[in-house]
Length: 498
Image (cartoon, rainbow, N blue to C red):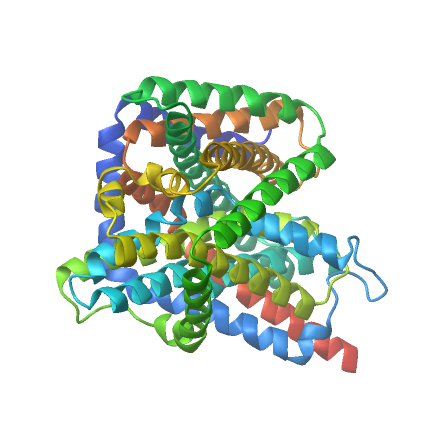
């Protein structure tokens, strides 16, 4: 462990950020917000151009002759059935983020848009913006990163590292090895900080769920820290043993709970209103997603510009932060699939589910506003973490649905931390598919510390800024990986015709 410079430096950097955040949470948050604000102001066009480019490349690859190439040898068959594979993709696309933002995000956008448009138009616009943030662009980032790793690992026999495509395509020399090493380091930092933010949001939501479940009030930081400690204890044991199948079962259980929850709300809620919103949401999204990917709000007022930075740009770099982590997971379960199967499954399935999810949870929120004139917007303004539970309280069996949401959120948190620690251990040990327990526990400690930093910040905006700060450098790495993939595919095509 101590003879690996990448591991030591990565632990030192992420550990230093965590220590800074614990000792001076406000200072770290202010520094991140200032630096990210400067980058977003000057590089907004580049970030949107990048994510739109990734989506267009994904569509082109899926439709091109390259789509028939297998991620593996030509005679390799998929390790998992199509149903199991899609179920795992579904699980990967469903996380604590959707549980947290299901109603909160559409209504947050509505609060702003309602000042510029009619209320019903504002609801439609807010739902579209939410679908855009969680849709094809986001999953194209994941898909292309995963595709690069899967292609170079399974077809060309390279280690499952971000650096492998760079060294393979451009040759092994001091410059490429240095660039590859730096790419691995930036991927590690981006994953660690991004996961820390998700831990904080998940803990906040579990805390609000416990409050709602038992009618608690003014529990403050005490309950939050208690839940955080239980979380830490919960992921320590899985990091000491090989629980691949166990983790899959936990993820599947969380997925079933979440799927059952959204189906229940669809059936017992205002079904006609929700289904109408889902269908309209699909139509408006399909009609505008490509054009909207190039919107930078350059000619809008400062308030809209601030919203654009805080939401759209932050989401895009957040997906970039998770891209290496999710990409490795997706790659590992996709051996034997063709590029076309891979891209269609990875991009379309989670996007479809997300649109349905927000159509139900967001739709219920809009029904409360437009039909019932409930005080749900006050909840959005004052307690984002509690919005989901406010919605669940409006329906029968709320004790069971809130309990199910708390359980699902906690399961997603545990599986995310354990999976991330495995991936970080693999990245920081040269692609070792079975990193040592000591390495995994070290990363578990760092992830817990980063999560604590985000919790202490007490602000979702601060969490977003810190995540964006860690992820911004990876924008350039993703583009380099795509260049490597296209170059390798072209070389394979040439070699096949020789």
